[in-house]
Amino acid sequence: MGTVLIVDDVKGNARLLELLLAPDGHAVRTASDGAEALHVVRAELPDLVLMDVMMPRVNGFEACRAIKQDPGTRLIPVVLVTALNDSASRIRGIEAGADDFVSKPFNAHELRARVRSLLRIKRYTDDLDSAESVIVSLALTIEARDRTTEGHCQRLAQYASALGRTLGLDEDDVSALERGGYLHDVGKVGIPDAVLLKRGALTPSEYDVIKLHPIIGDRLCGELRSLRNVRPIVRHHHERLDGSGYPDGLRDDAIPLLAQIMGIVDVFDALTTERPYKAVFPFTRAAEELRGEAARGWRRADLVAMFLEQVRPVSLLSLGKAKPATVLSTVARPPEHRRA
Image 1 (tube, helix red, strand yellow):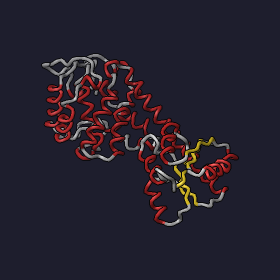
Image 2 (cartoon, helix red, strand yellow):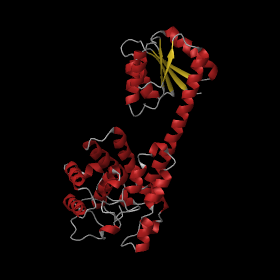
Image 3 (cartoon, one colour):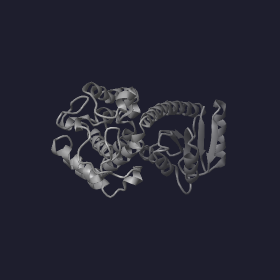
Image 4 (spheres, helix red, strand yellow):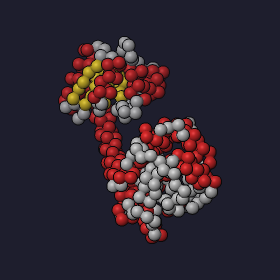
């Protein structure tokens, strides 16, 4: 059972579909055209849309395309109900993102079976989304363990996705960067507070414990297909181009681009916020440190330059940095022991 939105400008047709679906116990909503359908979909998020093609104002093709282009509604299955049986109309429907077609006059048993099948797939999708939400909540809980990292995940999501757009990456990669900002350090759930929140220098053995968090995070995300584009960010955002990073010692282009982007913005945010082991760096000092890492062969110089140019005019206060920056004459911790 689920909530089905029936869209048809002929009330008799909508009523017929409602009666056909009644035996399966679905909750039914109706809309008289594509424009009204879009309003209902965005307001109520039905589980499935059964939509006629030929309607006034906004037709079924246009409404379907709008539903599928909206990140908040694109996973809702859309079935186009049409008397148009020519291949051109079906191709147009496929290009609009339709999940299935029902031809008029339709077979009642076939219609009900298709609706049940698509609702079952929608439930699986919702379950995956719920699991991802749990992991995101876990990541935010980890951040809450340390008051000095408040807002860190949000800032990284903003920094990284903005840089991805500047680079011209596609929306899937930009979305992965945004989610990666929240999930990059989820593996710190397995790091003891005595190490994670330690004030002062880490011992070599403690640093080895810190270096486990990308592996733990990768395992946590590993069972979710919806996070397959995020996993490389989680595992490899501490790698360096010269192979001196962790956990796998990857070099150069073996480090995924999205992980390289996250590594740069992660270091920048660690430098420009207070941490247990360091005070706040002003923008100019943080930029100097990042350029230094590029000069040492740890970061791509072009990515560093592009990011610094992008973030330079942005007010740090607008991204949640409430404390004024303080110029430091020395780095409180050697770079290889910095805990981003």
